[in-house]
Length: 374
Image (cartoon, rainbow, N blue to C red; front, top):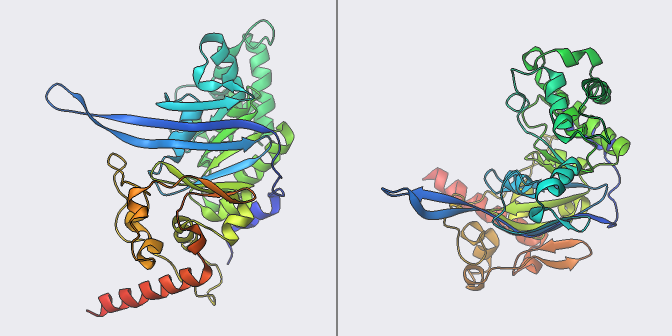
């Protein structure tokens, strides 16, 4: 039986857009977290959560960001929204550097950039009614021009957006514990929409929901993008959902962006060894199809002490196949363009062929069988 999430996403997916107007331009974004220790609690190191990430998101686009847990996807999303203080880099929204804004300028910018959180339970204050949860941002951003400071105007707007996400207006008087997980996520979406944003970070918005509910939320997000002319940064783990929902995809590994490509190009012809291994893990719903998987050896290195050179070289199947060239462990590869819209950070991307992948998977299978026999 096929995944209903994939079916729903496939039905609502828009045709990938050609590059147009850049809405958000992130340049060399860095976010390091200090490691404190010692008797006097001084800094003894730092975690390189996001390390020199650059990407552009076009207006009206659904840009997917994927990678293993702990690779820095969520931290990147929170950093470009100023929910985390960036260690370095720039984030431009229509030419304005978001990271440099202060006071009223930053307050105005926050109307244009919102977030949908992963946890539909923990992201809503259980002590506040829905009208106050959704209206809190309106109250903070209220002025004489928009009149959001008035309770009657806020309540009207809250009701409008509850209806936009498929809920009844009178739900505004209820509390979060009276709703299911899917309904709570709809409330979170209504809260993000209330300020009329242009750009929304969707931080794994369906990962905590049942599969049938996931399809409903994906349908809703796609419809809202068209209705309100939104642009999404869609952070997710479910590679099948990302394949059918997004226009372009960025792959992150250990704080670095390793590959960016249109969705059809990436899934048909991945050029980074990590992307190949990641995509090989997608289950095939047809039991008659036997798919060879590349299982990465070893553990993910610590982000507090990342490897030199290419950060993936300690687990790279292609490096093993090429005889462990020194360049992989000494020179950090830059994200370079290899074709129209396809970027990859690998010294030997031209060696990633279907034959190489199949032979590496077959070799790994033989080794695993021998180990199991012993």
